[in-house]
Amino acid sequence: MYDRILFPTDGSDVADPVFDYALDVADAHDAEIHVLHVADTTQDSVTVVGGDVVDVLVTEGERIVAETAERATERGLPVTTEVLQGHPSDGIVDYARNYDIDLVVMPTHGREGLKRVLLGSVTERVVNDAPVPVLTVNPDAEASPYPAANVLVPTDGSRGANLALDEGIGVVDATDATLHILHVVETGGLGIDVRSAVAEDRLAERADEVVADAADAAASASVDAVTEIAHGGAYRKILEYVEENDIDLVVVGTHGRTGFDRYLLGSVTSKLVRTSPVPVLLVRASTDDSSA
Image 1: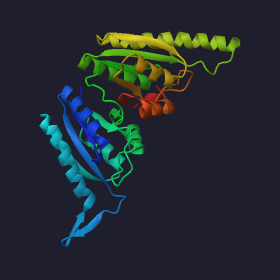
Image 2: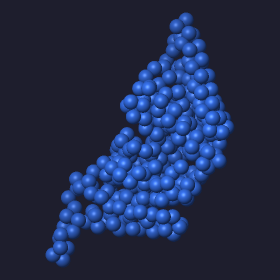
Image 3: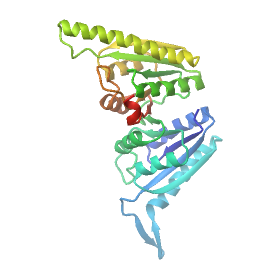
């Protein structure tokens, strides 16, 4: 499923546990891992050493990718390294596109410091622009296993969510995990009147349709699914489901659609990525896709 996995790194401590997870993913899928460092050209990095002009950021990047690649080699995994110059997020996205990368693995955040290139803003830009799914891993959370035993796909029935469902089904099929499908009916904003009763009926009917369609899609791929419909705030209900069902991986679309079932959009997804105790695999729908 994943043949080429990209791991961008700044060499910081927070990148280490995330790289371990990336290696587990590569190992499970017999994939080649690409280790990339982007020397941020917005920083003044040129100096003179022994009469020669040296770009210290590039030199440091070469050291970082060499040391990181050694860990992949020790596990018997094929590895490719590259150091580029430019804006970090642009460099990561361009590399993913130019080298036919299937998956990008990144930390959800980094730390303050001289090599501050893998912080939230960079990760978010990569998620928004990358042509392939991006797997975000919280470096501070307890390590999750890969292959995952339980994979959760929250869905609102949108095009973006359906793309995430396809990705989740593929992961489950490749790793023999259990697929969980969750739809959250958000009714908190409805008042107690006739109109709200009608709206709740529509929401309930829509929820049944969304879950049934998702289960049918899984069945078509010969994957059995555990399904659930929850009521409340989407973000909280997703996290509750993760905790209560020993979920190891969450797969979500980064764009949904407008309407009363629009709950997998920016704010929910962003909160989930930043706070999830388990890795989150984000599948981006293009503008054209999300309007389908």
